[in-house]
Image (cartoon, rainbow, N blue to C red; front, side):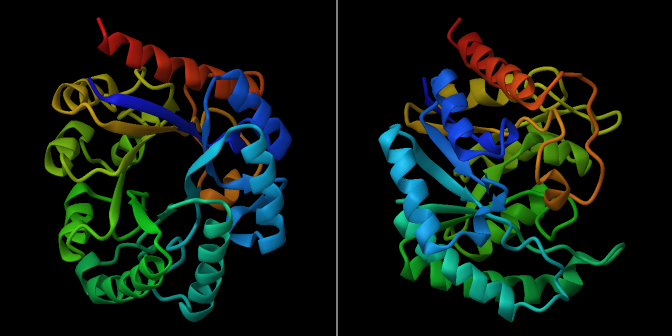
Length: 285
């Protein structure tokens, strides 16, 4: 059986780092995908702020599974130079945080655009980012976000193959559902290439986000197949998206759709953790 290791976007429980740490400890989770910190996005962190964060996380025995950055989450026709300079600064932040992975994206395309018209520019930008990341010893991991070049399983594989595995792959079943892609088919195509998973589920009917196992993401089936195939460590990053939280609007350009209701962010975060833990337990039976 695979050794599933839990991480989480703890900013969905609280925008305050101290509270994020407490929530992670209460859930017995010792990794974090750092995204929102005390009201700021991780891409805006200074070296001094990173040092302070690292001290707090280390004191509480919490490490980073990845920096949950927004890089590559701009339009493909937007200016890239400034974006790239900011990205280079985050590489330095990663070193301070002892983080060896950055979550990123492959640029939003104009509405109704033909993706192939922008393929070469996507490749050019990603190559530039990969080159800098590799110099710093950091692996870039691409997430299948709605509306970007790599929002389908086929284009995610195209990116993986073009860069010959240099670009890591993050598998988010809910995002695939919202793009009209069957997660089970996506998993079959990407099997053996996935760096880590985002634990988020959704309904095909309307794209609403639900707890893992309550949607059409086939998460139990995918994890069961994975567990049968490997005994290696597999990181599962819990990304609830079950309740409005600070910074959400900056992460996606549309309203959050939820079928399930929770009174506050911390409750939603807890229930998301319980769902993932129960899914893993179910694999042992």
